[in-house]
Image 1 (cartoon, rainbow, N blue to C red):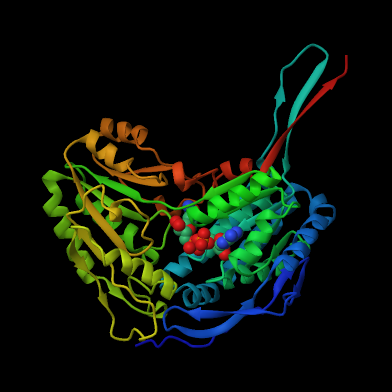
Image 2 (cartoon, helix red, strand yellow):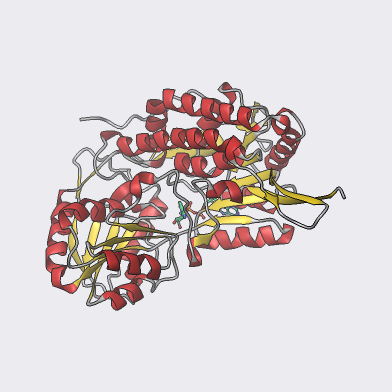
Length: 488
Ligand code: NAD
C-alpha cells in the first residue's frame, strides 16, 4: 500500500516569483499554503504575488520585447521551445509526482499532462517559423503584403485542474509567436507553472520572455488582467471570472481569449458500437475526478438502448476505486474542500433523479482528503439543474431521447457549447449531427481524440470564445499588419 507523501521534493523554490529571469520573493513578503488534496496536509508555500509583482513582471516582459527575445529569429525561438520540451521530458516523473500532490490527480493522469506539455513545446517549437503572411494582388504600381506580428505582452490566467496542459496550449503558443508572457497560475495548484519557468530558464529562454507570478485571483489575477501594459489576455477558468476578465480587457481595448466551462454531451444512438463507446462514455466523466472543462457530464441515450447503456455504465461505476493520487487508482480526490462541498451540494438535491451507481473509496484514503465517490445518475430530465449546470465533479447524468431532433435539442439546450461526442455507425447521421450540434469540437465515434495538441479548441456560448491549440492558436496570439507599398 502506497502512503501519500507529506513533503514535497522540488527542483525549484516554490516560494519565489520568476520575473525578468530572476527568482524573487513577493514584494509583500506574504505567502499562501500549498495543500495536498489527498490528505488535506499543508506541504509547502507559494508566493502571494500582488499588483506590485505584476507591475514588475509586465515591465520585464516589455523589456524582453525590446531585447534579445524580441530580436530572436523565429527559427531560434523554435529551438528554445523545443529545448524546453526536452527538459520537460527529462523531468516527466518529477513533474507527474509534483502535479499529483498539488492537484490530487492520479499519477498516470499527471504524467500524461507532463507528456502533453512536452508535445505542445515540440509542436509550437516546430511551428514558429511556419506562420507566414501573404502577398495581395492590388492596383497597378502597388505591392501589398501582410505581416504576422506578436501582440506584445500577453497575460495568461489559468485554473488548477490541468496546469501543465493549459500552460502548453496557452503560454507556449504565445511564446511561439514572439510575445512575452506573464503567467498567473491558480492559487490551488501552481507548482508545475513554477517548474515550467525553471525548465525554461535551464533551456536558455531569454530573461523576461516568461514571467510567473503566483497569487490570488482577486489580487495578482485582477491586477494582470486590468494592466494597461498587457496587449492580449488568455483566460481559462469559470464563467463568472471570465466575465470580469472580459470587462477588464474592454477597459484597455485588448483582445481576450476565454476558455470557460462546459456541460458536454455524448449522444449514443441505437446503432452505436457500445463495446467501443463504453470506456469513452465513463472515462470522459470521471477523468481528473470530473474536474475537466471538456468532461462529458451528460450522456444522451436513445430510449431503445437506455437500460443496456445504464446497466453497463453502472457496472463500470461500481468498479471505480477512489483514493490518494499517489496510489494511482481510477479517481483521486477533489482539489479542495470547497470543490467537494460544491459537488456534494449538487448530489444532495437530486430533483427526482436516481443514483444508478457510485464508485468506492479505497481503504487507504486518508481521512483529511477531499474524496467524493463518482455518481452515475439516471431518470434525469433536461430541465433538472444537474443536466444544465456545470458540476465540475465526477457526476454524469443519463438522459433518454427518442429521435435525432430531440437529441440535438437536448444537446444544444444548455448555455454551454464546448465539446460533444456522437456514437452512431450511420454516416449521414454523423454528418448531420456534426453540423447541428453547437460546440467548438465534435467527436464522431470517439471523445477527446487523445488530447489533440494539433486540434483547435474552444467554445461557443458561455463556454467562451477564441481558439487555442493547433495552428489556429498562433493566429490568435498574433496580429495581422497590412503593408501597401506604392512604387509606381
Ligand atoms: P476560476 O475562474 O475561479 O479561477 C481561474 C483562474 O482565475 C485562477 O488562476 C484564479 O486565481 C483566477 N481569478 C480568480 N478571480 C480572478 C479575478 N477577479 N481576476 C482575474 N483572475 C481571477 O476557475 P476555477 O474554479 O479555478 O476553474 C474551474 C473552471 O474553469 C470551470 O468552470 C472549468 O470549466 C473552467 N475550465 C475551462 C477550461 C477550458 O478550456 N474551457 C479548462 C479548464 C477549466
